[in-house]
Length: 221
Image (cartoon, rainbow, N blue to C red; front, side):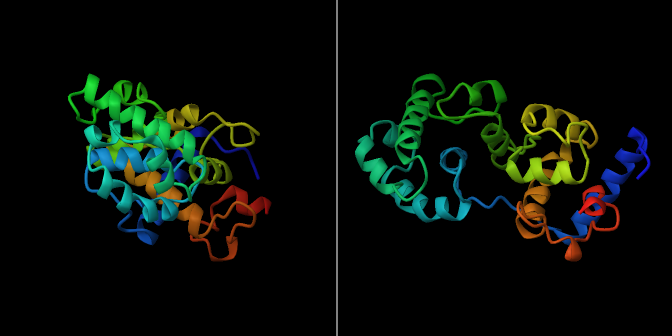
């Protein structure tokens, strides 16, 4: 293929995103939650495990510990028992108890709605903060997970698509620069859902992909 100009790439990105909007008209967060606190905890738990698995343990967890005050005072071993079926459950139990304590001490028991405060909490990185901002507070956020990294790489939506160790912060910066902030949260959702349904890690289903005609990765497959 001839080298694609930046202007042409951005035009293609918008064309492909319009197609994703048709294919996925109503994207939703896959984690079940009823409050910013529940979403924050669930997102911390979801690292390196599936949202489905997290949704299986959070009803009992939030039934026992409905808010930061209750979870901050929890017996770590009891929390571990509840979330034992998810990966790294001991570290995650420590983190969700720790962040609950910080919420009570520093934020009056409320989840803050800004990036700097969120990432200061135990176990909370930029991806988790973006999930909470976009889905709990309506603040533009673009979570970059493994699906987003894979799909934006195959679509050549970013300049470092061939890098063996792409930087999620750089991906967030480069991709969001091409779309209005009000689209960021749904853009991330759609890329994630597309990655789960079609653009699989081991063998993408290019034959059934709605982006097959324009995807540079499909041409190379």
